[in-house]
Length: 400
Image (cartoon, rainbow, N blue to C red; front, side, top):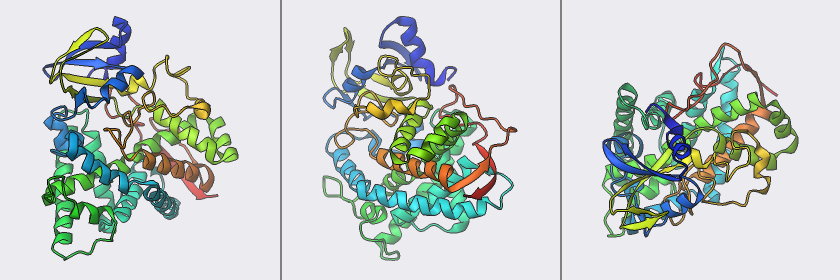
């Protein structure tokens, strides 16, 4: 809690090792970092997710007994549905909706004295997510729903008021989406065929049983919430454009290719997920350390993305580093590692990249704005999750 994103890296440097023991939340844990650690962590023969996520995180971020806590056939079955919904076609549809909704939002932004980009982007993305998923959303409740989705994320590394705010937000969201699922199932609401709402309402687990309405709602929220959470990456993207004006010029001049490099560097450089947890499935030895069955293990996300052995000048913001990136699924892990189709890596990573590219193109080529000096553009490496303190405020917004 005192060191945040750098907790694991601080000790890796101190001990000169990619592995060390620590006590986390009153229990012994092993912290690991680096590319080889990622490969081991995502080996389903060695690690499982069941029992790794504390109940306090399930009750705020993931939802109790959600896919992030599952292994084996149940995990694979639910993951296939996530992957099918978030296919290239689904990603393209989400990107098109995001482009449309950001353009619509710019009309109201022109009339606003100041725009807090994090908040406004969250509302835009909440509308996008619900429209794409087939979930009815009233205009007047979009901001409240967006705030609730982001409150769940904000509760991840929090204790006290922030944590309880996230728990209350999850409770409200689960009541809302459970009611929607029930209306689809009893015929009161027609869900668009093939939509996320339709698919989760009709989903059967490997045992042939329907999920209860609340569990189906939890998994549907696990699609909606991460889309809204892209607002954090959008705020970071705006910060990167502001701090690196040479990038703005390249984004305007070089188009799609440079935009891809840019958003990937935003995901690598700025703090988002600090670490991931799993438990050893069996006894085994790695790097001369004996892991015991059930042992808690934390994989260092932030440190691996800033590992000098994997990234030249890791503390510098350099989009061009992705010019020759080989697509390694174990060295670049902003949303987890390994193959998303077979393991626990986030299936929505393509959505994140596409929506970020749409937002960056919008900020650079669709609108003009000013960035007032009277705001706090810093971000903390202790607060988890982190984002620009001011939410990135822009003023005098106008279309190009």
